[in-house]
Image (cartoon, rainbow, N blue to C red; front, side, top):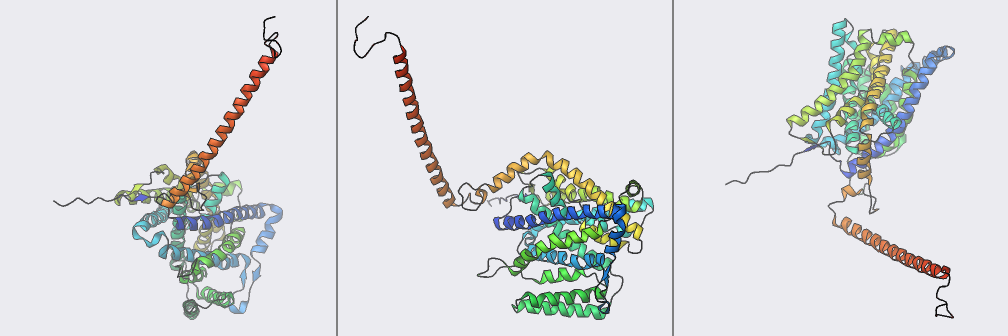
Amino acid sequence: MATPRTSTARKVLGRLSLPERTFVADALRTETVGGMLLLFAAIAALVWANVPALRASYESVGHFPLGPAALGLHLSVAHWAADGLLAVFFFVAGIELKRELVAGDLRDARAAALPVVAALCGMAAPAAVYALTNLAGGGSLGGWAVPTATDIAFALAVLAVIGTSLPSALRAFLLTLAVVDDLCAILIIAIFFTDRLDFAALGGAFVGLAVFWVLLRKGVRGWYVYVPLALVVWGLMYNSGVHATIAGVAMGLMLRCTTREGEERSPGEHIEHLVRPLSAGLAVPLFALFSAGVSVSGGALADVFTRPETLGVVLALVVGKTVGIFGGTWLTARFTRASLSDELAWPDVFALATLAGIGFTVSLLIGELAFTGDAALTDEVKAAVLTGSVIAAALATVLLRMRNARYRRLCEAEDRDDDLDGVPDVYAQDDPAYHLRMAAILERKAAEHRRLAEEKAKEQAAEKAAERAQRLAEVPGGAGEQNDSPA
């Protein structure tokens, strides 16, 4: 008789491997700092654009032209921030995506299914909510892509502000969602927001990318080679009519993200480590400074909930994102016969899906591209993005704070390192050397406790003897040293 085969149920959002956990922790640490700067920049933009005495200066600085006109690059400051600085952001996104595909969770089709399906559902559902809202209200369908992206830096800044700590599995899930979001956003921008093509410039950009790829494969090193080449590729891509940020992601995808013998980290990871602070700490906050300055008067906020385009953005971020990500995760777990990690519950996934409704950087960019010919509607859509993101952040704060004590215990268990070897104990349970080290540590502690117990016992005995002697000395007419006979 054939022996029945047994299979181990795959866990959804289970514990990460140690290298993946380390990478995620390093990446999110930088993104959290960048997210705080992003929040500061957004608030500064709102103040700058809404204080009557400062409003004119905000508009004049944002529209101030810079750059060589002969090269077709005489752009406003705000334009440079959107097309130039965000190319750095998408360059880092390209490296992240490449690493996930070749060395991270996405290299395994089974492991990748959950975050990919969740991310795709988390983009399709908001687009559907926006479309339904505008079909019912007679609005424009042009902004369907605005609420599709999640802003990982803004979401992490919210986590930092509310003082909650997500377990590493949930943080990695959020990061992977953002990576897939960024990839789809890049495709959306390239396909749906390219209205003209200059094939000569586009061909030059492809030649530049080919040179970039050859130099990488030949092992050529030196920033003085790649930075000028990257600027040329970016300029040609901009003049081709394709959004210039595509150049950034294309170059990021070309970097090697696997390690070779003798390498501690791949070239892609090394460059990402160098460039990520520039992206999170400078490029994205400056983009926010010149994009988030919209009117927040009572009338403007009221219009957000009455105009179908803006109401659609708010509902898509708050409802569409949550339903899409949670539904995609549940359906994937249901039909792949996977079970949720024992340490987590479905309310945790729902709270994370709500947090993913924070759309900012890419949403603002797509909002500008979707309604280029209508400045008033562009500003209203930006206000809707801010409003929806704030509502999503508030809901996520309530839901996450309800589970914060649980998250804190999980994080403490993940970080615990009793043997002080630099590796969390949860990753060393199957290592005999770990148990030997722990046995030695416990033996030393037991010996120390025995020594302390013996010293305490001696102290107590001495105290009792002193008390007895004092009582004998205080008894009137008691037995004396000279006369033992009765008085």
